[in-house]
Length: 63
Image 1: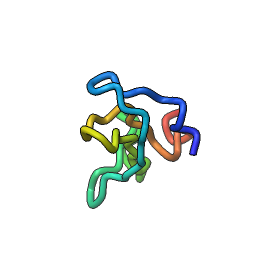
Image 2 (image 1 turned 60 degrees about the vertical axis):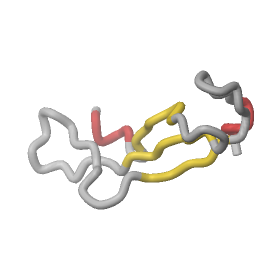
Image 3 (image 1 turned 180 degrees about the vertical axis):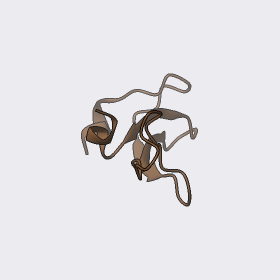
Image 4 (image 1 turned 30 degrees about the vertical axis):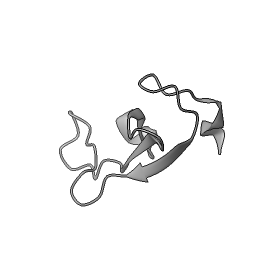
């Protein structure tokens, strides 16, 4: 996992995992009404739970 290089800003931990927001949590482009958007993936510190990164899996949907 590429996240092994991270350091948590909150607790200094260096172990991270990834999770996805479920349900209706897809991020949708503001100017595209009929777009399905993209699922959201979060990188989470396994020590304290701080979310260090939030990203979409389909960034091309926002071009």
